[in-house]
Image 1 (cartoon, rainbow, N blue to C red):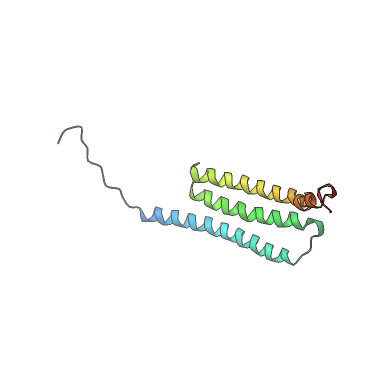
Image 2: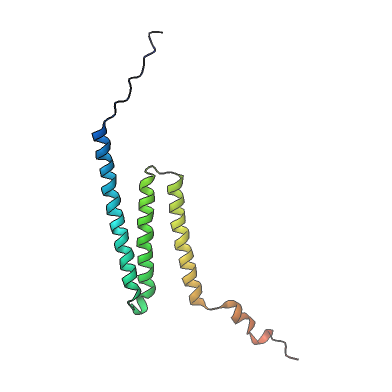
Length: 125
């Protein structure tokens, strides 16, 4: 063997450190699932409450909280800013745009139905 070649020392297995690391992740996951369960229960209870004109806002806030927690959990699995993280961000923006467009469209009425009933287009013999 040449002088510049060194053999690697084997990795020492530290079970106590790995157990502490596993407990850290366990506590982190328990906190997440407790928050998620709390929001799910809040959603179930809110289903029976009539918020009046605030129904849409309450539904969207609870949905955003659930989605945010799921996105946080998934992002914690992929710590570096990766392709998956960029896709989550794009998906959130896309979902917000679709919700906005749906709400906006529901306020404008039915343009196809309104166009058919225009008196100038009806051909009465």
